[in-house]
Length: 477
Ligand SMILES: Cc1cc2nc3c(=O)[nH]c(=O)nc-3n(C[C@H](O)[C@H](O)[C@H](O)COP(=O)(O)OP(=O)(O)OC[C@H]3O[C@@H](n4cnc5c(N)ncnc54)[C@H](O)[C@@H]3O)c2cc1C
Ligand code: HEM
Image (cartoon, rainbow, N blue to C red; front, side, top):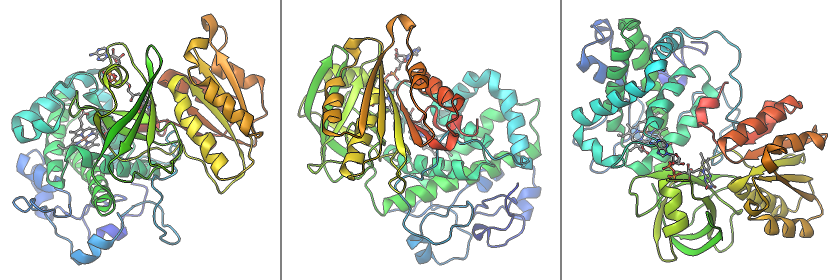
């Protein structure tokens, strides 16, 4: 690996894998010389260290480091990135643009082996996913109730994220920010440290079956180290989060406003204060589809009454979106996960904001505008609001009202009539955008083309922020 082999986390103990993060569960020399295919040794090697919770004593996480437990509890999550000058409290979400390219460096030996496996399983990813879940639920039936009853639509997310994280294991800064967020978000599923070895064991079971042509003891050892690293970051982030936030919030629907036949503005009151930043999103579960969580962006900056609003578009046959648009009514109780996302305003600069919002993607853009207004700054904000028809510009009145109150704000509706005018094309007509940070929000296709155009016209990648696409999948690309 490219980072120092001795990090604060590895206590200088040799044989810890030589990575940027050495799990505190050190495989002993004897263990690592045993055949790596033995399931027992996989499990032992993959057991990351968690903080004990009430009720978790019967399967206590293995702890082999010598640091005092109290110090561990009080410490912030260990972030094995570049040394930081001092340790102010971390922001709610690290400001790492998801699309930041990986620095050009030589891949570590583990990354090379991991990527070789990935190339092998890529064409049969569906089979790997099915086999992974089959293994998980057959070997660990107690974990099945944590997952949605029907696992068809987005069931590949866990495995995809795991594989992508493993592939980007050298891109520490982006990866750690992503995994910390993921670890915090896993609290709402009831995930505990002792569940991680089970998932790791089944991941390796599935990979070894479908990458048999390249699988050997060395590859397996690389995956064990990589998985241990990934899970330790998630576990630590979840443990730190436990000290300051609930695993989820209940939220009562207090208003439901159908703006078009398929777009609703849903306003909820959380059962306890819900801190977030304008531009972020949350995960949401409805009472009708238990354990099915989807992401929705906050449509306003934090309000003094504590209410949260979302703009939801019902997709054809979409489970959660249809429930929210066509079924939810005041009085219904939803569940919310923690806030996430780095598409937030940097108040330490006075650069302008170039905002591209497509469809319900206008919701977080409106939140950003409110955020700038509340900070009393007079920075130029240019909003391009794209939709397929005039009818789909369901929030244009709100945006135009905001423009009337704020001379620094410009709002340009862009209607894609018969595919002739595209939102990204409109950006090229205006500008220059040298002094602007760009924010892109909307359906994945629109984000992709928006980001492409922005890069094309010379906006540097680090000045472009957007909602998660396939989240980490775009990191380093
Ligand atoms: C960061 C982020 C922020 C977001 N913010 C918003 C927001 O503010 N507002 C908003 O409306 N959305 C937002 N989304 C999208 C949202 O999270 C959901 O993906 C969306 O609402 C669809 O969820 P669903 O459960 O209704 O659809 P799903 O059930 O997940 O289905 C999605 C689509 O796939 C199709 N489909 C489902 N199953 C299959 C299958 N087996 N084979 C083929 N096709 C299938 C469905 O017909 C549907 O069209 C955001 C997404 C992200 C990542
Ligand atoms: C390194 C390990 C893991 C990674 C990278 C990972 C990643 C993911 C991702 C990306 C999702 C999609 C939704 C989201 O973003 O929250 C997800 C969902 C989920 N994960 Fe994990 N996960 C890991 C370990 C675990 C473990 C140990 C458990 C506990 C058994 C678990 C349980 C779940 C559940 C219940 C869901 C929701 C299922 C769904 O929406 O289909 N995960 N995971």
